[in-house]
Image 1 (tube, rainbow, N blue to C red):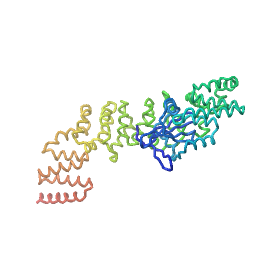
Image 2 (tube, helix red, strand yellow):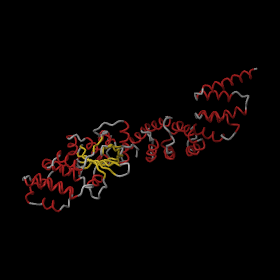
Image 3 (tube, rainbow, N blue to C red):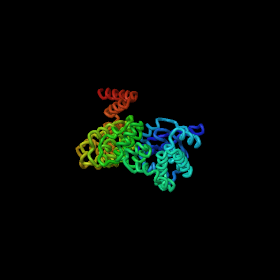
Image 4 (tube, rainbow, N blue to C red):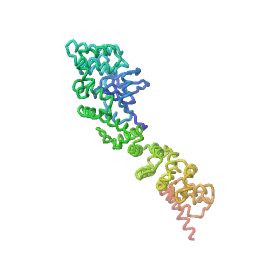
Length: 460
């Protein structure tokens, strides 16, 4: 996975605390952000639709709604651009449990309040949550508001399906007409209980995609809308559309690259994602990962992929030390990629010699030599290896090093030749040339003077 740390800032007891984001779960109307504190403990931030509710350190209980959200919801891993867009560099003020109880009940309906607090079951007792729901139920029932009372029962049974008290009440004859709506068609349920209708729809995303997309658009819940469309795209067997067209947020080039890699990691069966993921990795200078991706594919490099590789190998600002050369070797050995071999080797071998030395490069290119004897770059490497220990061939070796732009090694060879043949001006002339190409003007002028003097002496 691409390393792209994401963080979120909370204010607790008037102190700013930085948390490392782990993932975001979208589940029904809730979004739960899992983050990690400096001490390694888990911290959860809760959002109802787009509204921040609270944040808590918690050990997730088995069977809790936090656990279910990350098991059955739409989960975005850290580094996902949609998390960046959702957080938008916001800082979240943490309130006491008492303040949260008060603000939630003041701001939302009893149905929404019951729903929200059901997600706190990893740090609030079940008895506390059930007590709150029962209070709202009896408030409605005392006022003769049976439809609203039944909504509370529905929310309670969503939270705890085996709750005996709620089950017995829901079966009572007085709720028969209302209960039939929950068991009937979805359109009636949307009108009777929008909250439960959304819960019900979320449990079958594919069948209810149209309804949920319409709802998210209407309520401007663009993160949910984008996440839903990407989720269904990833789980479709043959969908080959550009995933960026599924988003309802604008991405920078870096965000686009991160998204494509994340999507490919989750759905490598999508051919378009595979192509786009390579381009994304190259954009992010993740050359080794990009090459590994191509080698896994075991097929023809496309022209655009070749051009990206060539551009990267030629760019000296991009280090090659992190490249997985075994994967690259396997990729270039493929018979369908022979037409690209010469260009890539010409760009890569000089840098490899500089980084790893001639012996390493010779060992690495050996598999290419038998079937590609016509390539001049391979012949050059072969010759360099054969003459590197021959004292009488150092001038020739120096010229080959110069051809590879390995100037320090070329200088060593020409210095050797100059000592062996002190009256020969040719190695001096080459030293003048090499130093000039290195931008070392003073050294170049020094050897130019020596060369000129040798020329005058030879003409006397």
